[in-house]
Length: 113
Length: 500
Image 1 (cartoon, rainbow over the protein chains, first blue to last red):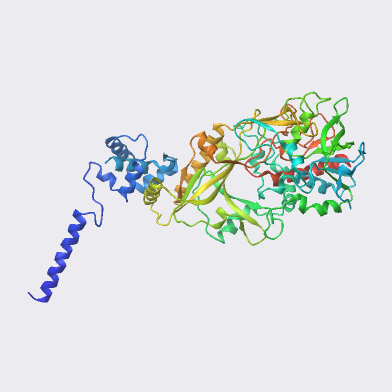
Image 2: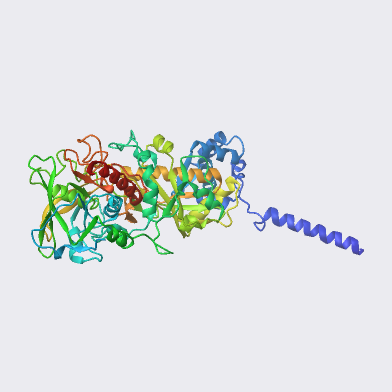
């Protein structure tokens, strides 16, 4: 084995290791068990923080109902939905924090998923 | 030149006959006397206290209370020359035009004249409080040159500005007794009488005019003042007390033929830590949390005020919301900030949180009132009792204002707001008061709805006027001193016309 082949082999092994760590560990990115609402939860940039917030939501419906409601209201991207909430005054209090309704629903879904 | 005269040195039975007797040497009384100094009118300025606070004199302010908790009646007042300006904070801001208007959702609202009637007097009032140039409407421009302002999305609140009274140099604020002592003494037509307590307003038998004032000192001396005109300028509580206690001719008290004197007591509640305001960038201009010298003789501070249109649409009362000291967030708060910032597409890695305070306007309430008790002070004057009342509705209306501020912060992507108070106990937990005694001798053109008319004259009496914030029928959330001075200067012009 010449030197070039050795280096290529090491690079390939490193790449495979990184891909494995990325895919199968939480070292680079947090992995969650698959749910039926992953298409919605993907909108959250930090699902752990959203879940922490969502756990504080009073009287939140179950995940299925939350997801159904979000699929109706969240037709475009999250940013558009959030701006629409703010413009329409659709804010929800979570322990006093005034937040766009869509953010609160997504956070509650994260907490229940 | 008139030196201060100690009333205790007068001969018993003395009768003084000035053109105008001003009862009270606080900011209204002093300003009125000085405004009239250039006339040929003889002005007698009667001050209960002296240059220094005397506990025995101050005790005459003591009274009792019922209803909701409130500061003791002798706590927010100072019975000495200069009155409340001996301990005021120097906050100045003109009332808004909407504060003068009849508001359909506010019973008993509406002044007898619009804000434009006071506009000519504000510059002189501003000079009296030494608050620098009149630049309330230039705060945005001046502040932006120093540090970026917090952007608010389009909505019901806007950034407004206080200016601050200053005495000289960095000493805050203007104490009227000290600051204007020399001016009073220099005025040949002003006779300042210290330690002189008015104990009764005596009317002519037909109850059409004030005939004389009974005056006493704590040393037991009694004398009489027979003026052509009387102006009560003794403050929002004491004006009502004198009127109610003077009941030998008008049995319900002077000017109280319609049971209005003492009612509608008002103050500006100052609940602390009503909200937590997070600034995503972590950068806050210094003029939000502190009074900032703008470099042109004006000291200013930013507040958030509701627009008249928002007040009308949501039926809210006046309020001025302040940013205060930094606070720490709990785990839910941090989660709310991170999640909201990501959703808004903004960076909150340097976010900082601040406590929010405010000054509020209360809904006018005829049952929030002063009455006399059977207990008497050292000179035999009945002491006051205050029935205080702050309703849940007062808090609920202000909460709507805070919620709109929160919405506007989200709209601009600048920050996030937490409402800290939901229940009455939470509002009252950190409650402070402005000690702005307002409304007890309210102004209205209809005698059945007010004690004085638009000129400050007591209905039905030809020569009795009232100065000061006691006559404010409504009062917004601006601190009263600048505004009562403008109103006093307007009264001075009126008196010049009728007393000359």
